[in-house]
Image (cartoon, rainbow, N blue to C red; front, side, top):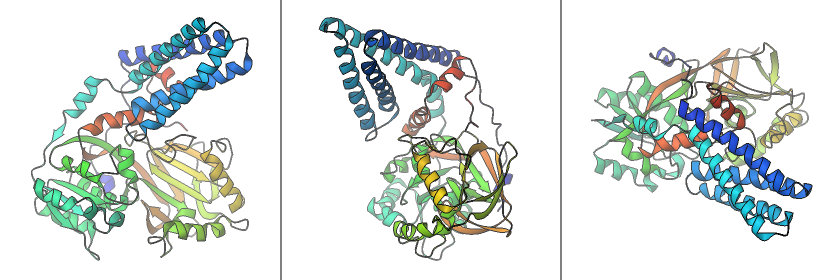
Length: 464
């Protein structure tokens, strides 16, 4: 099946920020600058206190942002950051002088300015309520939805959460994936029987296969997070711990248009891994014992004597790279810098592939680089390659490469042609997910983004 022929792919360009967003960006930047200046003025005679106060200021800002862009239980992280930052700031301000009344006034002014800055930044980076309500208005009520269930997925989550009885009560058609069945054919049979919406209760690999059939027949898809890790549901902003919450979308959902990616003619919703991870996934023991299999094989694959894999690619600046221990191509870019969002995507509709690759002389060196990247220490290393692209090619001298496609092991002919399909998937979600997705996108707040918005420029999606 050739997914790449799906019509009506919109252009990558986004509209420039609105006047409202530009105003909020200016206010947010100004408030941040004022807060720093005030803190310097209040504790300028004590360098140690000044450093501590700036650290506290940063913690309050980050914690406040997490508080207003997250939901429980992760919102508690923001509250903890605020509490810790306030304590550090209070210590710095109140130790600066012996005048308690003056210090209290200083502290109150700082809190007010910080609150203004955080709320203004949110206004600049999150769509206003009018836009969100407009998105919510795209309601779809399928007449004959069908839910395909994999009872083995996620250790039996379909049965654990009672998804089949719930679907029966809602009047949703049900198909059970039994061992040996062809999932793609099961989805096609459902459409042949009149289904106008397909849902999949299973893991990421199953989600991708059923979604590809829905795209092929131009009908909406619903993701029900009944797998083990549910990365796709997580990065959509769905509640992956409660698959029942997504069931309403099969009968009354809000339509979102998100990206999908392809390697050749095969669709993937998360990523394709080549090199180390693809080799581990190839093991027969991996499905039943992921952690144990990884621990057993990783030392040999990243040991001091390990050699790079037969993988080649070209960077955006034209450099030819030959030999890599790891290449990961993702449907939109993952967060790899130090963050509570590390190894997650803040959005799946930015119209860009994420490419992350590690090259090194030895496996041990590659392993150290991968580890250091988690802590933000490998960003300037020449053996680390990280960029965005709309298309990407991976070659090999042998003519084939092992690949983990959304966690499924495959041997694919090379060259591998990767492509992003912007907003090519119609997906139905619960109404609350629209706002949650906007909040998730906005967690990537940074000064550069606010500056771009203040200047009226669209925030770049192909940044490193």
